[in-house]
Length: 68
Ligand SMILES: [Zn+2]
Image: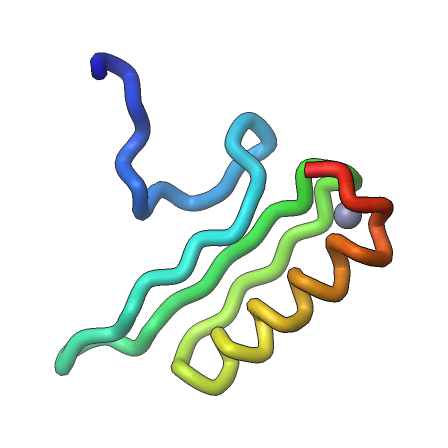
């Protein structure tokens, strides 16, 4: 509906979470997260780095107390 952010919007304080975009022939894949519990954030480019970022975010969520 009106005002709905696009799915590939970067995470912000208002919409914390993990965003991953697959790369194309011309761009590398990208990953970004912002933790809704403590505000920690990180960014990565490239398949290997994005995979590491996803693991990091998963671990962080556990360490951060599970708030989202
Ligand atoms: Zn956190």
